[in-house]
Image (cartoon, rainbow, N blue to C red; front, top):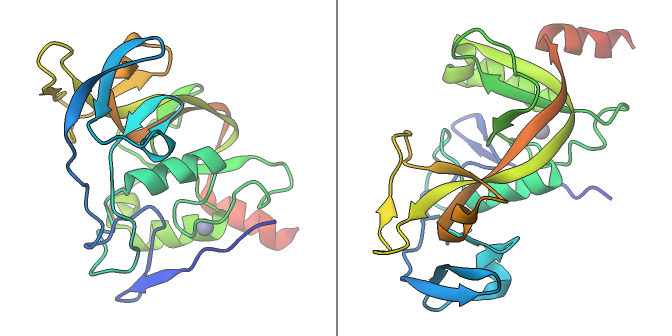
Length: 222
Ligand SMILES: [Zn+2]
């Protein structure tokens, strides 16, 4: 039962499922102190518990109108990133990566920054990718072309979120030193109640480093 989401192209390039479009903006909402089950934390003044929270964590509000305006190919739409992580969808075509390999492992492809393979238990906010899309990404993405590392992962475990942590006293955002100001917070960390989530974070387990070219060659041979 695999549904195929609509595919979008822009100037000859396949637009990733998780890429945000010009028409998709974060919506500013008033953050308030909220007393919920288990204690205090942040909430929205006009919160809708069914859509604004996942696993009890408050999520950033974001428009969802794929195909409106131009895409930001290197960007990440927080809610589609979350969807891709929860359901192990390919970050490019949005199809399930569960039924793409007979061994039910998932392919993860990341930019290689220091020549190191993906380590056992490593955290990531980058969703999986299917093999055809991996080949396409390495060919078309300038960042990945410079260097990448791929791994077949037996199990991606839910770990926490990356987002903006709010000061419990002043309710002002505390930006981290990371590029986007996000802090990674584990689900069992009390700080999670003060975090506005923007990415789902998983850990990668039972990892086997693979070479994309030989993976494609195996497929042809099989
Ligand atoms: Zn794909």
